[in-house]
Amino acid sequence: LAFALHDADRAGRLRHTSYALETIDGLAVIDLTRGDLAAARARYAEAIATGRAALGEDNALVLAARARAALVDGLDGKPVDTELAAVEAAQAKTLGATHPDTAET
Image 1 (cartoon, one colour):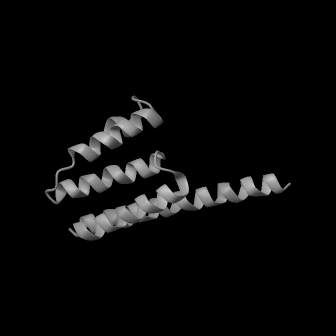
Image 2 (spheres, rainbow, N blue to C red):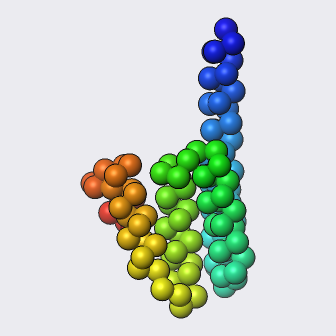
């Protein structure tokens, strides 16, 4: 029973983290539409840190947040090729080379 409760608690925390990351992403998109790159970048940094802590480095949501953070950096004129290549490699390893997220990055 204790094992089942632990699994249920973990699943609940993972689901909560997924919802939180989706919410942060939505807020970052609003920041972008307002032209506030700094606010969007800060939100993606929060999403990346939260996701890494709860889901791990190679989770699809964390990788997506890293890709979007890099795109924001690109809009701000910063070089992003190295980060996008690293995200794409991690996505290919984790999700597969034909996964839509890998192709999109």
